[in-house]
Image (cartoon, rainbow, N blue to C red; front, side):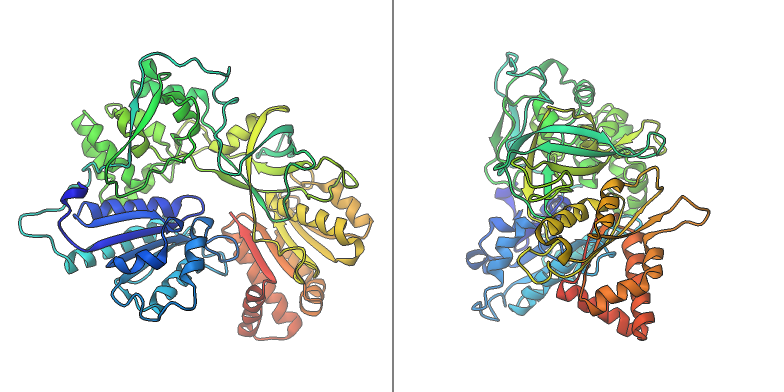
Length: 610
């Protein structure tokens, strides 16, 4: 198709994505414009040198998520650093039109900060806005899509009116297959002999900067009677094996279970060739770069590809249905599938996929006439993306005692397992895999620098700390506490407000906290929401501890850390802090709100929720 593009200007679509959402949306924008015959190129932001490339495009569309404390994701930081160079002329992009879309969460003070910064910089450099910035919100009833699809509709309508198609040329239908970057192909007709006994357990994708360690313990730390299984996983790290700081994360690449892979192979008719060697053939002029990583699992077969690289248990997006409609032999199936691609039926798509958490595998099993060609698998099935977990242990001191030659890496993981209207229990791809690990099992990790905690050399780090952490949000706070205690002992003041359901069900690390309280290293306040008739949450404790918190925050300059689930909790915490400021400072509400905003700007209010 690339050689026959006839309409519109050259369009550049860039994305900076943390968990993959912005990348998925960028691909959706690309495919939508390609079907209207625009000349489109899509890539992650760091792959482009802005100095040599940006002015050569007429239209630029940037999609970005916000990470950390209002920052741009790692795969967009190099681009952003160059884009901020002061010597760039203010009219450098005067011939360029642009727009942006942000993926954010309105429970953060810096809601969609990354997209807003990028949008502002384009304007500063003379670019003209083609349509208003779009802002997706995870808290929307339909998630990010609730804002994305209306924004995309306006964008496409505007560009189509500005650059109409020549007479006789019509937009391609929604289900028209576009050319991918790579086609999968069988490279042999003899079964591979695997060098390991278990292709799931014993094979690992060698990601850049990855390190191979071993699990020491995988312990359930919630009561057997408790509804949720939370694991405290300890990973052995040699003394010189790795360094990390409080607030850092490890990213883990999950794996699909053999039974799910087998079901996929059976429903697609691939069982007989699942263990044949596989390869890639590059298309001549792709618009979208391949979503597959540079380092593929070896040996590469359909079985290993589906186990390690393709997320067959992901919840499908609208673009997935556009593609599989081409492979449905049953006309009733095809008609139903195409309904999910119609923007007018967005609610129906949401009810079919996101609300019940229906997976790609289950969709293909339901629409059994859909048979995806091997060549298109990597184009149709989304790539498996790493999941991030906060490190729950200190790198210089731990709860076991003095610093040792060997420092264990620890994470606290809530195993995702729940029911919807679908009979089969829903399970998180990554946490299901983590729950299966046993002592001695290998685990491949990548350390990632976090932004929740200031560097230990800064003034902010050495200020008193107020840590508000319900549930597994206490993990990075544990790492921070032990690091501070190991470093400065009594000299640093620490307050922890911890919330959970019950004292005897999910009070994580209770013995550690008790020891620290006895040694006067920690002031602890707890909120057990189900241990009394009236529910009690961390925001209630904040109000009860108003005097102490006012002393810590206003008079001692404490840094406030908020970690845990997104949604109502961070909003309630902010509101409670504002009430404390109003009460103890004798301020009007707008003054108290401004004070909290100033704390955030100064780095004294830091939030990480998921």
